[in-house]
Image (tube, rainbow, N blue to C red; front, side):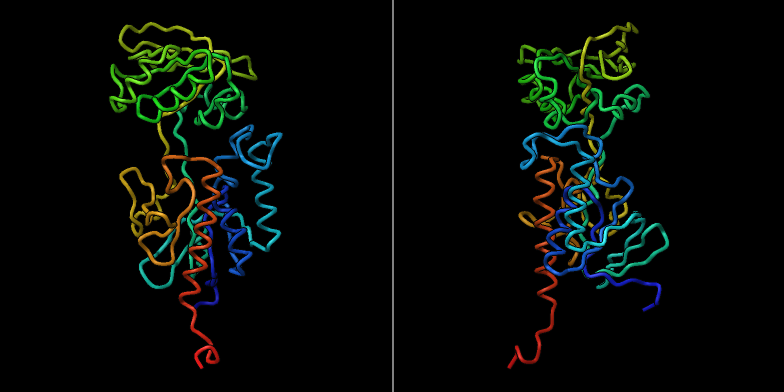
Length: 323
């Protein structure tokens, strides 16, 4: 083996709740984990201004602060947390090969994928402005809906997830206005019926977002356009929710791992095991249903335990153990 190649017992790719939890468990099991933080250290949670639904934080905590605490806990048990991101892998042979920043080559006994997923946004400058300010733009109703209790919000989307998020928000908010770009939903008939039969949900078909309006600090409304008539109008709102899907950050694995039609890693049910022996997955890279910090952390624990058991099964018993 070249002197430039590093050998690692457990490599963790990604640094959200899944990655850091995997690191804590792996480190405590003497697996000497190395964790690369990726292009977004801390993961999606770093874009969340307030986290109030994670157990153990009775007064709430910001997403960035929470991820810093996760990192400190992982480092307490000597996890080697590194800057950089994985740009290439080769899982074709018995040795799992990983390249970091296109240059550094690492050979791994086990790999835990915790690369997460990225929420899709419209890409409007005003949307990104208030998203970065934490002033009223969100891609997770379950995470942030509580902050808009008894207020009016706008939600963009037409699929099952959008219908589900709109229905969830309707239980908290005074009014939910759904903007649907076409003349029909993409959601299943049962989800479509659910939102249509909810009194405080208004559905505007053939309607697109022109701009997110605000006072420079927080959202105050949404400027929309009817793409049939061309009419432009403003909708008063304190929250703007985007529910147009997520993209799992799994492209570099597609040559070796089984992925579903949208790119989520397919794992053995009830485990974190992928189709490649010694490669495990946790968090939103495999979860398109729950997408919560607490569920991601739980699967991070599973992945570390599965990796530990895999390594144990590969160990050669000592001679005295065979006697």
